[in-house]
Length: 284
Image 1: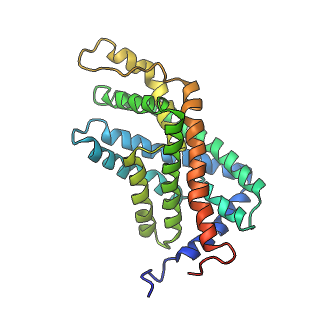
Image 2: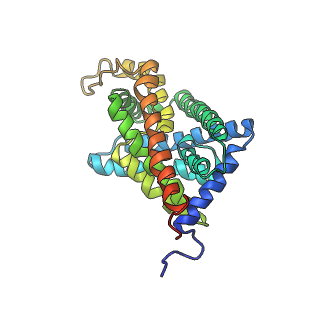
Image 3: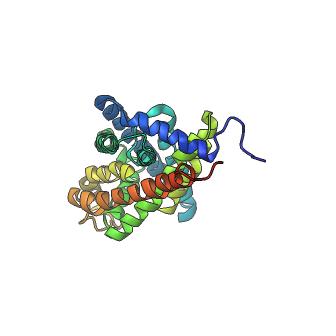
């Protein structure tokens, strides 16, 4: 006997819903797609901003600090899914519609390219607004120090580390979106989103769109933080030599984006298509 609520979708029904939504996304008009993508970039940035604020001065152990940061970060995907916006990492699931023959690859590539650009604009826009708001000065600039430290750590990952963390991240992000499709009510969608997103942030995985906020924000406030703590004897600044725009694109965004595509499009979208939708697949 199935334990699913009668209002919820079965795994096969979720797969069918993902195909339906993927077809709709592939046909969105360019400007609407771009605007919704900018909103998603901002929304994910809000999650990153809140995670930084909550975690910047906690003294309760690294693991629990990561857990709390992940918990509040999940608000970003809730805004995207429930409010309605276009997120590149979640849209990796459009591969399911293509594999099922319901959407064209050209529509997928148009969506991915446009949404990626819009997400970038949104992430950098929020980072710029945060810089202009001066909130990095909060708590004697310890918030800014935390933001720069986060950004710096991301650009100092090796290509393999960033790529692998990107796979693991979007495997969970797309599972969050997939599970959210299974619920017909907002509370159910919130719970579906919360646990996978908390897990990826707490685990230290890499999300390309979140990094479009985290790293530019660190770059915007880098010189101010260096100036603020240059003569401080109580704060040891990390070596920020690698925190540059070039390293943001090449050492983080490139490998993380590739990893995100593998994690979302293959490990979720493709595998679930094969299991539930391909001819001769499971019927449940």
